[in-house]
Image 1 (cartoon, rainbow, N blue to C red):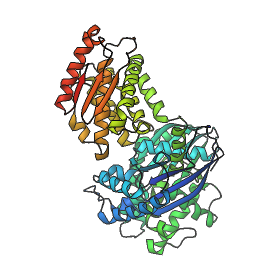
Image 2 (image 1 turned 135 degrees about the vertical axis):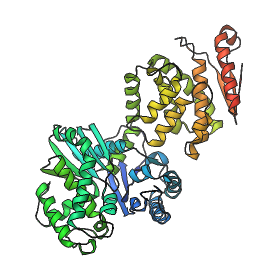
Image 3 (image 1 turned 90 degrees about the vertical axis):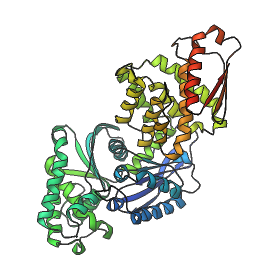
Image 4 (image 1 turned 30 degrees about the vertical axis):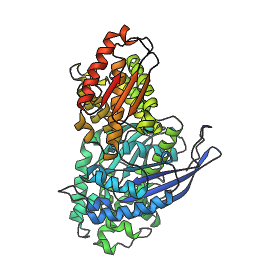
Length: 505
């Protein structure tokens, strides 16, 4: 991995990224020393979580969850002592799909000792590209990146460190192997059926990616690396994986006839049960996109996670760029948003200690919600808080996990009118109380700045005890601002209905 120079600010001496993939779980630990980052440890275990996802009920089987939790307990031992801001763990396609994914996530967090996020397919694609781009040493080539995971396959076109077009398709080495080679038999008919299914998945993006201009193609992650290693071992290709090599490997796999008879150089035993499914996806992709060859990158999602974590610590958080882009796209009144943001953060800093809200964890989320609380006005003024929540919940928001995206949408949904308790009850259990409290602070800031005037707010104090808030403004200020008094009285009524008490003077 290329070394990265950090800004002089204080950072943890070690950083770690955990990838809870559909086939394998990975842990990468990096050392920060003299302003540089170097990988010092890698752990990988095949858990095949996607194999335990029932295709009908969409529930993870208990035995497969137990195996995954045992792995995370071992990872957790390695991570012991690292602060929470130095570790980022994400779940991918299987946890996106599983109906009991949130229950598993809570168990995973307990085993790992750190928060686990579930990321959307395009966010996974962005992080994969980030890892691959750093592996290229900062080269500015325009490139196509392909990553075959256990349950999904990502395609990204980007230039330098910036992805331009990203797609995530529901096909992977585990899911395809389970569906088309369930008994381990490797027949020509099954392979052709798997390839046809993959071509069907590729059809909506085929023209876009086939006609796009790029200088090179790069494949990454376990399936492509394993296939390339086998092909190189037999001399079918050199450092690049070619279409011809894929065809030769396909023949060798079918000649074996059964997974148990796969005896290929450089193929690990744990890769055998899912090789055929991954090969079908790769073969179909070479055909559909008319690829001749691809380079193979050692870096992928977990390294992208690490670089993304570094960016956050260097105040280069992609989530901030995403919010600025939304403000511009939907023509949000940025001056009013900034006024609400300043007031909301003032409220947070005063209420955080008694409400046990860690500023480093919640300050950013409240800031982004304040900047975007009026985004729904782009649709209609009538119930714009609901329109805004819909836009944020359903859009692709680079940098945000699914939990963060849902939380952001909930704050915007709840910033005015009746307090929507049911919205917050749908959040993960450990986020519900903090989220409600953040929303109360946002609502208070919106009420105080409802006049939209440029005049600075006077100094005020806010004390929070349980569900009671005491807001104290300078003596006589409310007498000179009767509309603000009326707004606060209305807000006190809304909060009372939801179990909060606002006392102001």
